[in-house]
Image (cartoon, rainbow, N blue to C red; front, side, top):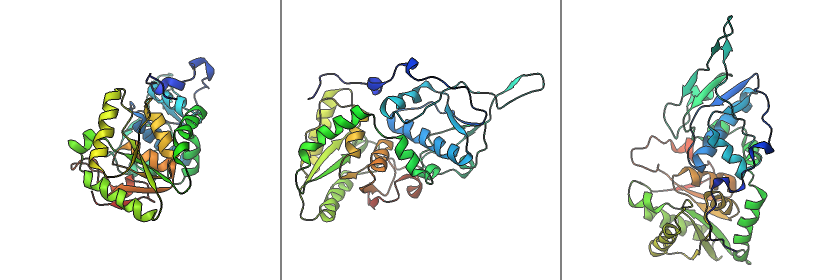
Length: 302
């Protein structure tokens, strides 16, 4: 049943003593970015892991925030160190690593992808091309904590009756009403397209809004979607949190996403029917569509 509290990302976080810190590896790749919300954390870490797999070195992070991923994805073997020495001088003085910054967010940077071992990377690293040759490893790494899996399945199970299709729709009302180039019309077209894809079947929609800590905002987003998108929405759970929302997306039959990083990961881990916009979140974005959205997603006009 629903709880009255709103668990944080660290709801399932293991105690620090529960996993030992290994010694610093000899060959490594440092993620120097500070972090962000769940989708941003997942992007940056997955990209560094993808590059590290190609280089056959260990990915390490500088910000403690990335350890929050362990709470959600136990397979994310996050190793945190302060920036190690790239090398030492003959007197023993530590030479800090060179930090390479991406050219622009939401696009693939060849210079970052070609980085050498014992170097740092800074940026959002929001392109699936950084780990396109390691999709199996990334999906295995981002397998949800069993408790989150169970809660997501418990929420969806009553709506999985014969012939029914559960569609997760990721929409942030604030983006649509203010800065976003992804319009309400896009979401209406996407729902109409889902009707065509699943012709003759009943569709139920779950609104994924980002997991506000304020329940009133969740209710407001839900009512707004009901009034503006003419489909049948399943009432969202009272215990919203981003990790549970994403787990529900992943267990749905299909997804409709906006241009946010949260939506990307819901679609990427779902790996089923997906509709995405053919634009970025904002009109001024430098996003490259082919670098950013999952390649199997059908793209519709914004």
